[in-house]
Image (tube, rainbow, N blue to C red; front, side):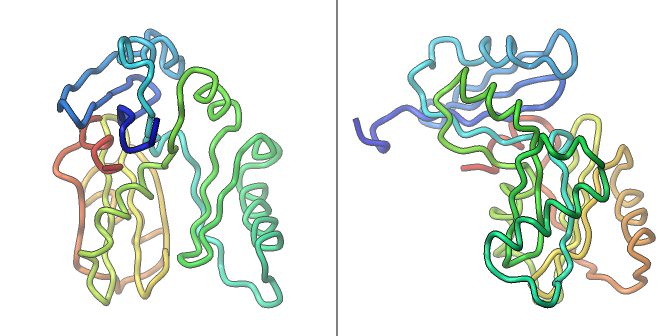
Length: 217
């Protein structure tokens, strides 16, 4: 069976809930985790009857760590760049980062890290076609709207907001906090020590899990 003929489902995975959308029928389902962080049963619930579907999973920014990796002289090639990205996570988060799967985007300078055990659990439960951090899925959807001077990417969720500044073709800063709206932007501006930043703010049309899932389409 070809990939084009298979059923497809997109899922937004949050610590406290799972949301699923089946694009070909526009059917939507949600289930709450009985204990925050224990999402496995909720995932099984929303996928009932869709067991043969290929799954695209968008991970809540609360389940992903981000770091902007500065350009470093003398570092080149995939192996050296991956080592440098992991070094920054170790410096910020200590030994627990050893259990994270680290990915680095050379073009934009952004590295992301996901707990390896989460990835393995997903692979054991579903036919995983793609796994995308929410920030990256949203950026791919919004990138064509970013002006030359750059923009703030603001991604609200039920209990957190991700604020990222993309300017001059690279990421300048990323944070995930409980702050909302303009407060979240101002906190990131102050953290970066930058009084001058783009005025454009791009954000999805809502903060529910279905909005998160649909960024992957």
